[in-house]
Amino acid sequence: MIADRLTVARKSMPYKQKDIANKLGISNTHLSSLEKGRCQPSKQLLKAYCATFNINEEWLINGKGEMFKRTYEATDASNALTELERLLDLKEKGGITDNEFVLLKDNLLAPLKASKVP
Picture 1 (tube, one colour):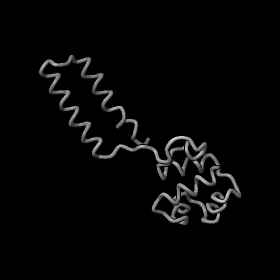
Picture 2 (tube, helix red, strand yellow):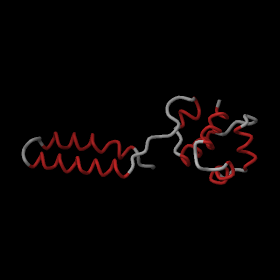
Picture 3 (cartoon, helix red, strand yellow):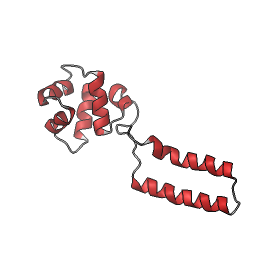
Picture 4 (tube, helix red, strand yellow):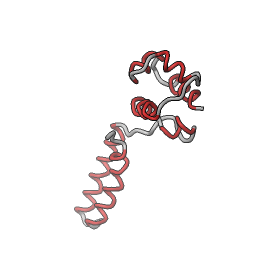
């Protein structure tokens, strides 16, 4: 039930109910009503909740998947840069072709591009 997952999500974050309500632009009373199942959240509010707190929308609505969306941190970008430098070196030494380099580079950077917030 969405109400239960809203409560679970809140309790897994370092915010109080009033903090979450403030960030979403709703009253604490309204958020409490949502968490108790007294009313249903609008699609717009669900999207805002997920975007604001990095919650997986599929989990919040249907209970499927992980609660939080995977995010790529600075270490992921640093690791990708190191690997990209290794690929470039390999290409310059003739170990891979230009086309292979482009394919490998695109595959390496795809998760980082996907993690950007529009």
